Length: 432
Picture 1 (tube, rainbow, N blue to C red):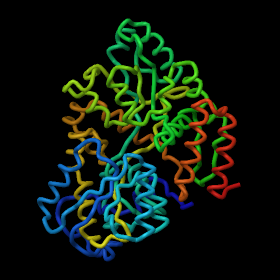
Picture 2: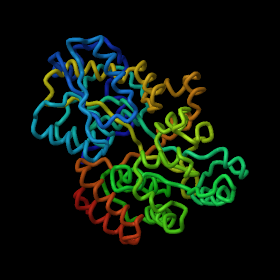
Picture 3: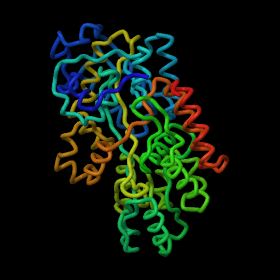
Picture 4: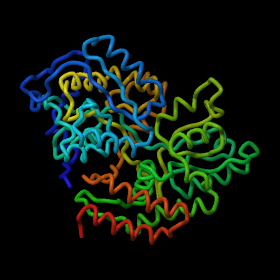
């Protein structure tokens, strides 16, 4: 497992080839560390997960119009993060060069960097203060920047503000408070047939995210900074047990164990949920005025609740990295600068409500007026905890998903599931 520097250390050691992310070609500092390795110009590809927003083609068209000799072709992979990762690893191991730029989940950076599947980005000795520090941390490995923070993500609690208002309740700060508030709301005639809460509980990467939040929001952690597992802690048990009990007692609908992001979003938009743990992308879709959402204008966003107070989000988001096998790395670098620039991040936010990685956009008054959840989201990201940063991340997340799903589905008691997870993580990380 690699050594991870504190956030301040990363900001000092990594250069920001990102801070001047514009549309021009060529680096600002040809002598910058790593710049010489980025050679070759011409067409490139972007390997990314399925684009459910429909925004990406518009962005790519803008680049291609300005760079006819260095066009970008999008290779759209599965909408399953686990399948995306496997496909990218397959390409990297074959050194095929099919993918030039990789859209990596923030937790894949360590694995791809450690295996040299991606190349370090130039260090132009620029101020990294333009970016939220956790996004730089998630794009670095052993103090070196290996990817550019493109989008970030923090978990948010979506709630039916119209129904809470009628019930005389405020957004809950604790899990117990959420359960109590939901019981009051469900007594309203307007809430007939509604369920209380759902997150992402299907056996996939989203469950790793949600489970890590359960543990962190109860005061624990799955893996510490040295890679030592703590999955069988009292805090982990309290977190997992609350949600497992919630499924059994009806607070969480049984069908929620089949929910990924989109299934939960549809349930919330159709008015079937009082509360929903979700990423910020849901905001724009749930507020659509084309008839696709029954809750447009009727919901709000709050911080995630926790065991004894406000909860802790898992750090989400995506980074753009250059494949080691890419032929036209100079073009790939310029394209990444374009995609992570303030202008494009602003447009990405406006078109799809994706969370930006640049601090200034969270403090822009016009954007906050349009997206009032931005201050809550910024706080969520700054306080977010990363999922386990381990080189063998694929093995770790598979073990986590199996344990959490077994407990939530009722197949295994939470205490037994956590004890087995502890043993698996110790083997994976080579720790005692």
